[in-house]
Length: 136
Image (tube, rainbow, N blue to C red):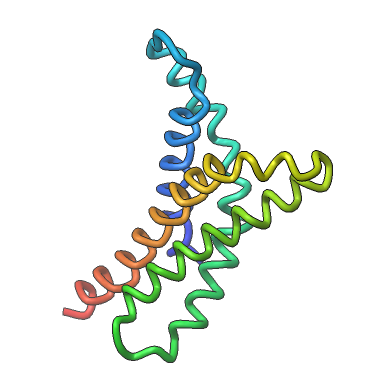
């Protein structure tokens, strides 16, 4: 489970930065505004925990038996999990708002991919690169 802690931190920081960029108001931006948006962007952490870790465990179970192109397939599964997670979140939000929330699919998808792709890349690096380094 400790191997999942570093990807959660990395993906939360990336998601928070993208949240800041997506929902920042136009015009002059100073450092305090950027930090404020970054802190408010940390709202992605519960979503990373709720969706990222279970999807990661599921992806590990799926790729366990795969022999060829294991890192590539794992990365594509992380991208797919970001799309599925976005759909689930929007379906939950649409229960209260109706169908209009699906008009915001693109920003939510960008936000979800900014979390799932770094999560996947850091998980793959921790799994394959450090595993080979520690075995020498």
